[in-house]
Image 1: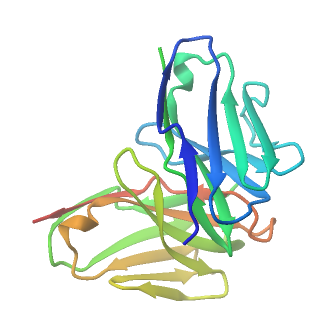
Image 2: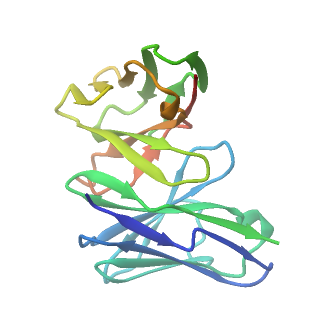
Length: 113
Length: 115
């Protein structure tokens, strides 16, 4: 079946630094990928839609200059959390669709100290 | 704005029981509905996908139904096993993008099956 791989699975960084998270579709091409964020005991919230070869579309309330998305190829989207702060600590997870099904990566647990 | 609600928030039952997890959504103009399983600290595993034109889907011991007009879906788990313990998430896909929209998730039902 389709597989979406996300890396890293967890990261700890210092406040003020930037962190890059990669999302790859391993056996299919994805012109669109989605980035979600999940705070403890909350539901997954869509942050942005990543479009191959064009700008990402951000959901209301998500700072595009803070969460940089690059979808440079049909199998790779990256999310960079810039100037991270402790309140950015969360579970970030990406998704890609194939034949209607949404497949998710393993998620990245980000802790900013 | 679409809102998805899952009831109950948590459920603990002895193994062998048949279970029903409920999901409701406020905007019936959906493209599809998908049920996922999430294990602690892990990503999501897709369980069942129901297109808006369908009424139910089955996979093994799992059966999901969809009543789009009333904004409801149920996930039925037969003969529950301890390995079924996880958080079950319901998510709806919007219609505007023809299935290309991101999903709107409920908060999930945290299920514990006691051995």
